[in-house]
Image (cartoon, rainbow, N blue to C red; front, side):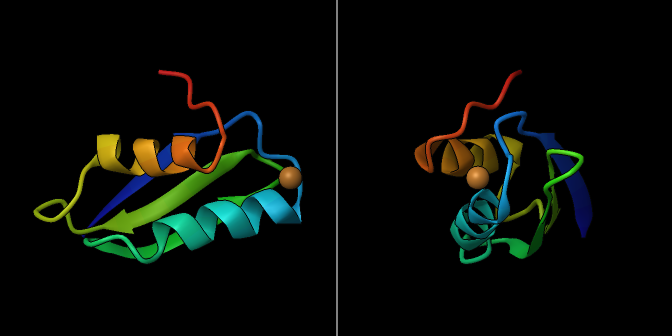
Length: 69
Ligand SMILES: [Cu+2]
């Protein structure tokens, strides 16, 4: 199990938190997804044999949030 932290500067409220957590949690290989609204980060526990950072970033972008490289 690996913990990835992804910075998403556009996170600003509970709606963002629920959107992003809801998008990531069902993905294969994702054990948990936790948005910190104040820090504007997403912390994701993953099994890297089933997913990777790029897949998570794509899912966040599909929710409408820009993820800087
Ligand atoms: Cu919001």
